[in-house]
Amino acid sequence: MTIYNINLGIGWASSGVEYAQAYRAKLLRSIKEPAKFIFMDMILADNIQHLTDNIGFKDDEIIWLYTHFTDLKITLTTYRLSQVLAGFDGNPSREETEGKIRRFFYEEQDSFLTCYLRNENSPFVERCEYVSRGILVRKDYFSYTRYCTEFFIPKNNQATLIERRFYNENGSVAYSMQMADGREVFRFPDRFLVGRQELIRYFMQTLNLTKQDLVILDRETNIGQPIFEEAQKARLGVVVHAEHYSANSTDDQYILWNNYYDYQFTNADKVDFFIVATDRQKEVLANQFAKYTDHVPSIYSIPVGSLASLSHSDQRKPFSMITASRLATEKHIDWLVRSVVRAKREIPELSFDIYGKGGEEGKLLSLIDDLGASDYIQLKGHADLAEVYKNYEVYLSASTSEGFGLTLMEAIGSGLPIIGFDVPYGNQTFVSQGENGYLLENSADQVVERITASFAEKIVKLYQNKELDSMRQASYARAEDFLTSRVEEAWTQLIEEVTHAEFV
Image 1 (tube, one colour):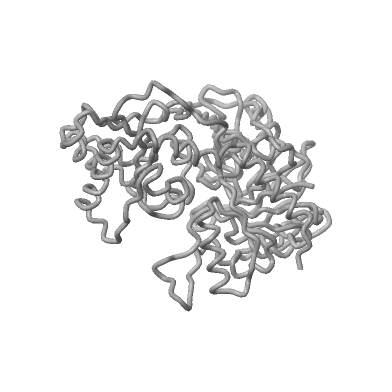
Image 2 (image 1 turned 135 degrees about the vertical axis):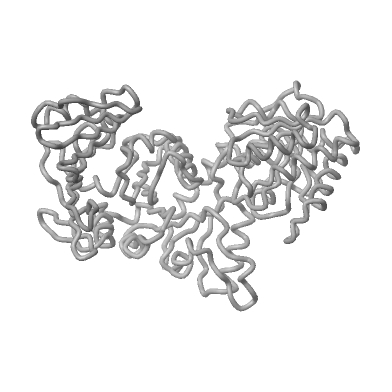
């Protein structure tokens, strides 16, 4: 049995989907379930291994669609600059260096070679571009050997890609990808495939799936049909990573599914199981399937993160509050700043630390300064928060949308009460109203004065009513459901039930 997890792309600034997959990889390793993580996008700007390794995947867990048909391994780039130069005729007459870019000029041939190194001053090359007589003619891509070449011709004064070749370890061409009349044609030794959809179908067929295998689809955009059709040989699951419908466009007769999940929900009769991150989203989705469709799918609630253990401390700073997130507009950190300033009028000892980086940093610093709050409200930047939460007493969140909320989970794992909005799904998962925090009404008009007053009122109430100790214990109790051992049990149960079920 193998669990195949299918995604599209990955980058240096990965999204929550990739981090959820990386966490899943770690967990499946722990329960000794063999898993592969498949990336379907064309990824050439970087060696994919550098991207997957960056967030914690193991090399032998990764399948990239485009090297799957070769005998190359996923591994870091170790192809040397000297090897590249040895394969280029002549000797360079001069060279230039700019960061991790090395450019070699062959003036007698009226050409130059641009090499992009793995790191600045590294001897290893990720890719090279060959320009002859001012025209880009070729790009090569390297890991421990050359794995791909792109060929270009000039068209309308631009370099136009006409062919890609993917290689085996011995340098032979495993297959080629040619551009013809706006279509991609894949030429293998034993077949021609027209279009990426057919390449994906062939890829799925090479997995030789059985009913003991699981295919878990994390992203579907433009790849759903061949995967759905070929995965019927296995057990097909779909992960719902975000809010799955538009509340504003839904009424008693019609529901507008999120575009990213419309295909999966419309074809839910082909899906053996869905996975959501919270019990609340499971409840909502199940009710919507019952109301708007004829489908009655199996839905599992499995967190996209977990706590190795609960974190206790008797050294918390009195009257200290914390938040942690990207410093982005939708996180509304400015509301929290204004709320703390307001609450401090009644509780002078309050302090508030903000962890994270982002585009709103400058605006927040200016706001804090304008409000004269810089001595008790501080931006702390990035930090490993595992041992940080337990130094504080209260967690604040002004986000109006959290599909899960890893920071919320980590906060209750350190015994912090939470004050936030009553919004799906993270806050509703981690906060029990009045027991381990407060959930505030989220009005559509989002009047800042009203929001600020509501947050400040709850901060003051928590401290003045001396509810901190009881709420701390309630947070610890809630956090026990998210211990790693519990999440491992949930995955083990899903795998057992799905692989042994008889689906009609």
